[in-house]
Structures are given as C-alpha cells and as structure tokens.
Length: 227
Image (cartoon, rainbow, N blue to C red; front, top):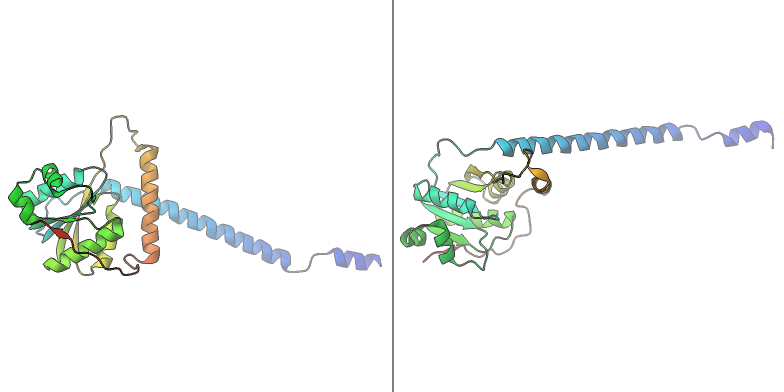
C-alpha cells in the first residue's frame, strides 16, 4: 500500500468529529440550563413559602378546610377560625382511621353541640390528591364556592393546585401555618427541613408534569358527617 493511501485511511471521516462535538456541547448546555432552572425554582419556592402569611383581613368564606399533619397545630387553627365565625362548617381531611371523633373534639376544645353541627371528618384521604378529591366532594355537596384552606406553608402550593384541579371554579383563600422550630434549629432550618422542602418541591414538579388531579377515577366515599 502506498504512503498516500495509508494517510488517507488513517484520516477520520470528515464531519463526524465536529457533529459529535456540537452534540456534546448542546447536551452540556441543556443539562446546565435544566439544572439552573431547577435550582432557581427551588430558591423561589423556598422564598415563597418562607414569606407566606395568612391574610391580615379574612374575607367571608363558605367553609374551612384543614389538611391534617404531623401535629395538631393546623387543627387548632381551623377550630379557632370556625369558633370565630369565619366559616359555617369545618372539614378535617385525612383523619387517621384509628382516631375517634371524641378524641378530635377534645383536641379542638369545641363544645359538643358545635362539633356535632359544624365539623365534618374525612377518613378516606391518604395523600394530597385524596385531600383534593374529598374537599371537592364536600364543597359540591354543600354548594360552597369559596373555602379557607389551612395547611402548612410548604404544602400550600401543591394543595391549592390539586384542589383547584379537582373542583374548578372554587375560590381558595390560603391560610398557611408556619412550621415551628426548636431553639436548637439553625437559622437556615437544618438538613431535616431542607430535605423536607426538597421532597415537597419534587412532588410539586411531578404534579405540574402530570397535570394535577388527572389520575384514574375511583369511587370516592362520602365524607363522614357528625350526627
């Protein structure tokens, strides 16, 4: 084989290396852009929930909805709102099946007559999607068009989105409840809170991606009404 033929065969095919390099640069750009969007979104999410506060003046609403959490602080807030006449009924969504109505009444410090007439307990919801479905059923059954939603500040964006999707047209007034911190918690919240917020941010993105409320339909039992 001649020397010129050897050089020609050893030379890479024209166009392959530049195309591969361009694709790699495009991938790096898209990856960096995506990471920047995710990080920026998380920062905005944390800023939003950190500055979220209940309305200074509460508008007139039809009913109050409380989504249960790890402690009873949200329930106490909902009971106070009901007691002060900010809504005619209170729905507590996501109640543990092991907890009896009498225990909740004691926790809320409501008189028996007030609890029986005006508090509804939802034992069916097991997640935010379930909360939204049960809240929509409850509001439709009572003809409510405006509700006051009580949940933690970090959970509020996803909860509002799911409920709005489950029942379009309902007006939701957010009443975020801040998470309490111990004296030993760092100013930035600590790793436990950071991981909690990252998980919630991820769930919020998933809800956006799948369209909130768009899941296979199931028969939803009616909310338990006190008698």
